[in-house]
Image 1 (cartoon, one colour):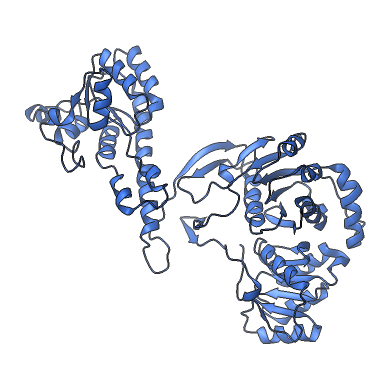
Image 2 (cartoon, one colour):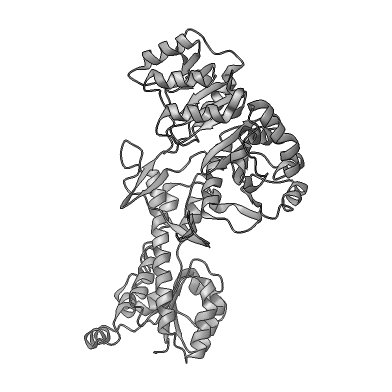
Amino acid sequence: MQPIRRALVSVSDKTGVTELGRELAEMGVEILSTGGTMRALAEAGVAVTAVDSYTGFPEMMDGRVKTLHPKIHGGLLALRGNPTHMAQAAAHGVGMIDLVVCNLYPFQATVARPQVTLEEAVEQIDIGGPSMIRSAAKNLAAVTVVCNPARYPEVLAEMHAHDGAVTDETRRRLALEAFTHTARYDSAIATWLGGQFRGDDSGLPPLKVVWLEKLQGLRYGENPHQRAALYREEAAAEPGIAGAEQHHGKELSYNNLVDLMSAMEAARDFTDPTAVIIKHNNPCGAASAPTLAQAFTDAWVCDPVSAFGGVIALNRVVDVDTARLIGNAEVLREAIVPRYQAETGDTESTVLAAFVEAIIAPGYESEALALLKQRANLRVLEQPAFAPPAQPDFALRQLTGGALLQDPDAKAVTRGDCRVVTKLAPTEEQWPALLFADRIAKHVKSNAIVLCSGTRTLGIGAGQMSRVDSSMIAAHKAGRRAQGSVLASDAMFPARDGLDAAARTGAVAVIQPGGSVRDEEVIAAADEQGIAMVLTGMRHFRH
């Protein structure tokens, strides 16, 4: 191992740089530097040589050109064991540089500022820094590159332990970190500029860069034989589930995280206090109410059989009254089950327990959090950034060998979007229920049928290959309370059999997108059945 004799130190983040410089100087390392880093080192009493003095070429163009010089990159890239390289270096006065300490202009912090201009952003695109880092990392056999101040102590410790040298293993690891650093930096630039310059009339970028950083390993994936880990997307429009804080409970599983994401996305679609219970990535109960406690109870009563082991999203700070209900076996036994049986007529189904896998909300009252922590197996998550961002990111879905990119399904139908197409119009009482049902249907796997009364679900049919089958499942879940309900379909009825199935559930009003070549046939069927029906023109497939 060759000892480090010359180092180039040029950093934007100056954390620990003067301490590093002092120790390098004490070990006899010649230090080259630029600009603010050089001034910081000099003011700390560290002997330092300006890069322009070393190269004999002045910094120019407001510092845009300073380290882009053969004496710098030749000293980094020369293969020490190659006689031709070393002869050429000697002929041109190129000295070897053994260590590069460099991190980059704060581009990400700059573009995170509100109202940042393109000109301001462009000035924070580092050129010399990435070039030096990449040159040093390419020659990892001889050159050590450090771009993270947290690595300074271990590099210095190795130099002290090995007579000024760094081991091959450490150089390789630092080189990988260096290329990761520049890749992340370039992806941040490409992502931000992609948001400024749309590539075509579709508004979708010609190139989508996704940078994922591993946060933690998971015990397994969807099934025990699959490996899995949780990653955070760099420069994401919102922190989302990956940025939620876990206050209590054991490690989250892959399926927990998927369900929590779906639950949060559904619950934040509503402005009134709302609870959504997700099981296997589908809502099995949802309700809006004047209080969060009532919303939770109404949601659980929808289908307490399926709610066992589900995850819950609440769109309000959780209060004590609500916390007392969650996972409470006594409440389930004395209030939820009797109410469910009375409403549905179902006295045969087995309601196992009040067990909840996980809960997510924008916050918790301190006493409420203390109550929830008494549930040993309940995972409690908080995400203050619960509401959707003003400018949501694209929805990305991986395919084998590629990916699909689309706008998120962030739109919600309003009454003004609806067109009454039947002889009978919905009553004023039915309108809120129709709109609520349509919004829940958006979060149910297609084919989706949702039965509601007021602003609570009664029965949900999800993920069937036939809309008729989904109607049958929803009716079965709702039991006798389906009579007089309203029904939402996430997509059109392709023929009247779907509408007839909707009528058989007991629903008296239907909301659906329309758009079938047989719409007139379906409308006629609704009139025959004495059902009010409105068309929204907005489909909500969820595959």
